[in-house]
Amino acid sequence: MANLQKLVIIGGGEIRKAETLSFDRETVKLSGKRHPKLLFIPTASSDSENYCDAVKKYFGGKLGCRIDLLLLLKQSLSKKVIKEKILGSDIIYVGGGNTLMMMNAWRRDGVDKLLKAAARKGTVLSGVSAGSICWFSFGLSDSRRFKNPKADLIRVSGLGLIDALHNPHYHSEKDRRPELKIMLKKSGDVGIAVDDHCAIKVLGDKYQVIASRPGANAYKVFWKNGKYFEELIRKESVFKPIKELLSK
Image (tube, rainbow, N blue to C red; front, top):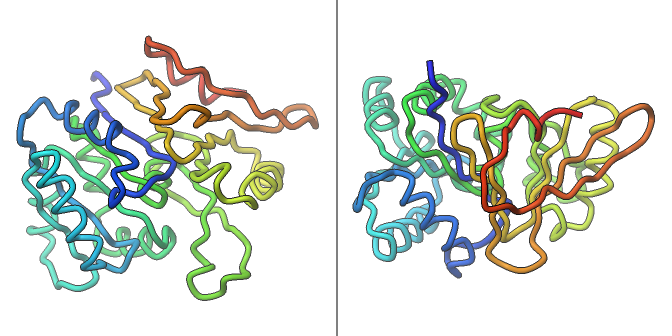
């Protein structure tokens, strides 16, 4: 069976400031529809009303999407309703926030399995920060800092659509580079680190790096034979095999 998954993985940027506009336009374009149905999942922000309002104005008003919300924490939704929302959408956009809390809530409600099913049927999947970590096997997350600002970054399990450890906000949050180096030495994972204003577009088994600002990049980082590598992932006009991105 062909791999139909479509992902737009965004390293960071504020939709309120339209900092990810070029990526979000690409997300809408990938749906193949002029007015696609976009499901916003704000679990990581504890179903923030302000975040939901911003998404409605931005993706609805600016980009012409029909907006639906999946509020797992503030509403008591049946499994049938959750399934209909997820599998009935053209685009699923996941917001930022507490990745660990989000993944725990998704697994409790079966959202993880439904999102994998949506990926298999070709639904466009996108998001920023926690909403980019979730598509990978693992992510470097600041989830503990929501209760303790001095807490260490942690390795959080995601959905595994891409078999690597993802690190968003790579250069904008100064402790991420050294923490990632330590984490990868412990775990042995391949890391995919993405700056703010940079994104990775995945179509099936191929990928492409795109950026909205000069100097915004993505990197493959890993340990091999006792040596640490941080390799710039080149921005090219053609898609490349994703297996090259995930191997050491």
